[in-house]
Length: 471
Image 1 (tube, one colour):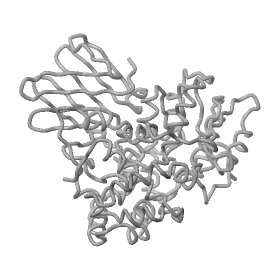
Image 2 (tube, one colour):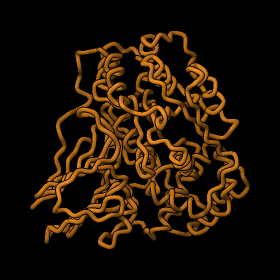
Image 3 (tube, rainbow, N blue to C red):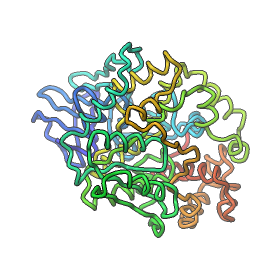
Image 4 (cartoon, one colour):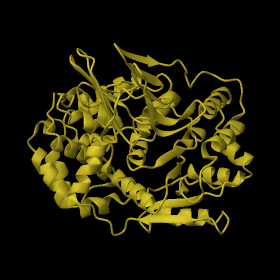
């Protein structure tokens, strides 16, 4: 059976168990199976909750694409797909881990550790099963996606997985998310190659490159294939909507991603059930190095110098994290993907839709990793060539569909109040809240400052809603 969220509680002493699926209490005496996401064979993007006659089992996928959070103290274990459902639970006691604040704001997640930003709460590792019976067991299945593979049938594995994921889906209620970037163009040509006539959809401001370029790209398909656009030009969110987004995401991501939530709700209201994403085809066109991670996936120095109070501490946190990275490719997939982009699967599932990520396939990712590691050659153009597209112009300067300046301006009063409440709070020991508030008020934030502000503001709103203190 389908689920869009779950909350499971387990009392260590009495061994009493309670399970809520989509806010409905489940009778644990009746064996049943629930699933969020999709599966094909042993692969997929999912969370499974299985009820047997003697136990409750919770299992995630190879990539931890759907977040599973675990709270544990001396008395209770609470497991949920949403941080807020744990933190707001009467049986939990949670604060903000002050020792992790700079680590989080360096990467927008906590790399190479299971802990979250909130005390006593950790994130389930990939490919792991939780078993609650007379005792609690946590078993990570030994299937490492980065073992070398001598089979370099890269294109074949991509084609096979795409067919397996999409077969049986209706073209009426399934759409490919198309942008101006380099990843979705592979998906477009791949679906065309396979004669899969799914429509395309794009969201953004009407003058954004994503909207303009994706219209041209859609014309590469047959004229009868559907096209959907969700435009943001006149969208202004209410305070309650802003608070709800922060609550859903646990304060962990940028506020600009609220537009994704609006897009998904809009597509659902238009009758769509499945959205095809192309995230992380980037692994085919970039050899990810430690230098690349430091320069492109951490907070810019300009921001650190302006807004971080203890710069030496920040530098130590960033450096110590980078030292833990043994394999940048593995880091990219398991850290940036599962933790940095968790909100996409979370939001699509929460609103009753299915997110299907074409590059997420065990054999394809393994073949891609093996090929690049052995040859030193990227696979992006190799795949396009197999699709009969040898002369595709890649987009070097892809710009996002969201205008952060407009978003901040439209909701200025709300965000100014949020910062006002924090200007002398415990969080002001870590960030220069007064400076940020002044620049936000005068509309003089640079694009990098806007990017930082939207991450910080989402975190602060969640902190305030749940009355969280620093530990």
